[in-house]
Image 1 (cartoon, rainbow, N blue to C red):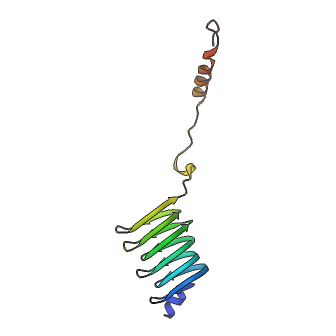
Image 2: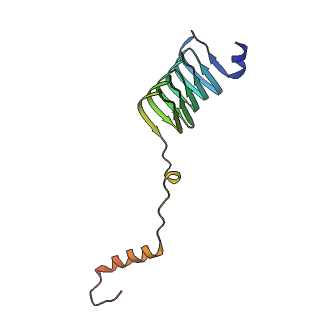
Image 3: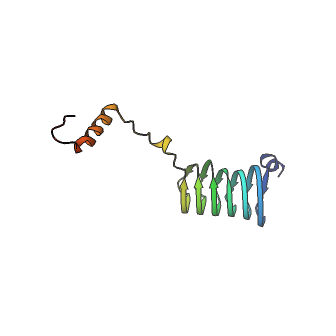
Length: 143
């Protein structure tokens, strides 16, 4: 058990049930038992028998067990083959292993600048567009 305490800032062992919790953890939390409540953590690890229900927020998470309700991450969400997530899921990046289950409202930030470059308008296109706008001019005028 001392090895576990050295690796994580917060640990919930198998057979432990914490309900009504409101936790703010600045490091890594590993959950092998069950937590029901609000959890704010830098990195969350939900073990194969772990269950986390409630409002979960943080930077990154690795899910081997079950997460339910709301999961909001700014960074990477990794869902292992045994992982199951149900609810409102928001992530920065996503990695899923075959067998992973995600059900609910799933979203990420769509940064248009990094995914699709803005079109570059050439001088020729601008000149062409300007000439089309001059179609309203009387027929005897030349453009």
